[in-house]
Image (cartoon, rainbow, N blue to C red; front, top):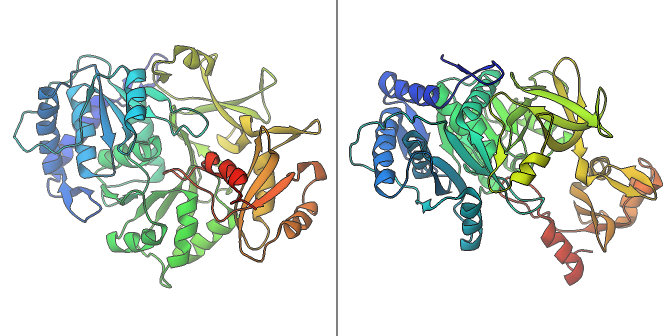
Length: 472
């Protein structure tokens, strides 16, 4: 396994190592499935490499150029995977965004990345030679979810992406016998770094779930595909428990969860039903995979992925205790394309500001306890909404909760619960667990928490419900 050194002397894998490995599988295991589509059709490694070469030539003929961004409206499809790999093999900079994005959203992302070419996903058939290795540093552009503001385009170097993804695969124990079910969008960093790159590097099989996935379809899909690994979000894991067969999922060995904290009740119920532990992955679009829960460690802690460093900062000083989490990964730092000032604000002494609050110990354990920008002041005292949400969720009959502060509505919580749960009952429950100032001013019972495709809560529809009366 060949690795190159970064500016700090750390040894990294990169673009060439990834494609060398992909072409090696095409020679050694040409009939082994590389990708299985949602409709069950499969693309083996031999045909995948041939399709990437042909599609690289197709992209070149349609305006893609080495070193230049090429926008790719990405879905969970074989064509999307082939086109992403073809653009990268050509030496272009793949800019991945949701195929369902509006024209205005697409234009904004292309403007930030300075992308002049947009190509739909395609699997070209005309035989072509493998493109010449690019002479320049290879880059990739991923889009953040935008749940805390407008979406941003993150420019990353392939050496950092591949090295981090492969190190995650080593920690997770990926192998060529694994069938890895991808339930989140391929254009998101979670799917890209936990499924796409590490699966193809290790010779595993990627199984693509339809997107957006139906919660009721997750368990049947796991059983039908005999997946050994699944990558998903807490919301889908919790919903899937309702359709779990009595015999469980005997092929499943590893369940990766990210996007938001796992509820203890979901974690324990999933383990009991399947025998496979739900393991938290902590990551960020700008950094890749930061931490991964050990198979036998505490539920609230992740081990730093090899090569990743983390520390905390409190009141403007580096701290040995709790504080805002700063992280550094091997390779060149990522940047926000078209937003140089934001890039500069995001780093302190070369460390990236995650916006998360937590702790890091000397053994490489990292615990995330909340978001810095979610911590609020109530009556002059600080409140962490994550603590409040956990207290609400501990009440029998409560299925979900988010505590937030709105400019006009004040400090409130939106709660999804069974019909017999009342606001009065919730207040009595919280009074036994929290100081009075931590209890939200209002507790709104809602039928559901609207979520993005990666399971993050969309706040705008909830606030809208307060004005139109759909939230009680």
